[in-house]
Amino acid sequence: MASTKGISGFVIAAVICSVVALGAAGLAVADDKSKGTHRHYKGEVVEKAGSLAIKDETGSTYSLSEREAHRQGRGFKVGDKVDFTVNENNTLIDVHLAGEKGKHKHVTGKLVHVGLMKKEIKLQTAEGEQTFPLLLQETKTKGLAEGAEVTVELNEAGTVIDLHEGKHKESH
Image (cartoon, rainbow, N blue to C red):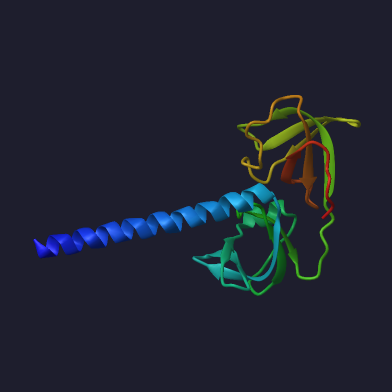
């Protein structure tokens, strides 16, 4: 009986600690998403499990597939020092060799179509209809209605790395 109470007490304490920890993490994630900002880091390209990754100053790693590097318009090798950006979902969206400045472009238009089978977005702009490839299908496209005014952020390769409703307000 005494050991059952001890185990029950331990389980209850573990559950309470987990709930408190998850609640705090949830608040941190909710707070981070509400900011809607990109975070910029310095790091180094490393090999992890046979693939390329980026390791930041704190030791965190971010996957960098060859396909993703190509979509970024670059080729990277182990040992390269890089500056990189992650979005509010902690997803790698931009990578440059250290010291390189990104030359991003913002395009605003009315949403015509978001491709589900093919990762692309089509906008009606002042220059006519334009289609842009999406880095990730999840790039904030859910819940956008056709005809909504949106601004896409394009990297140097012309790939959409971020998307916002309305006109572009801040410069990077």
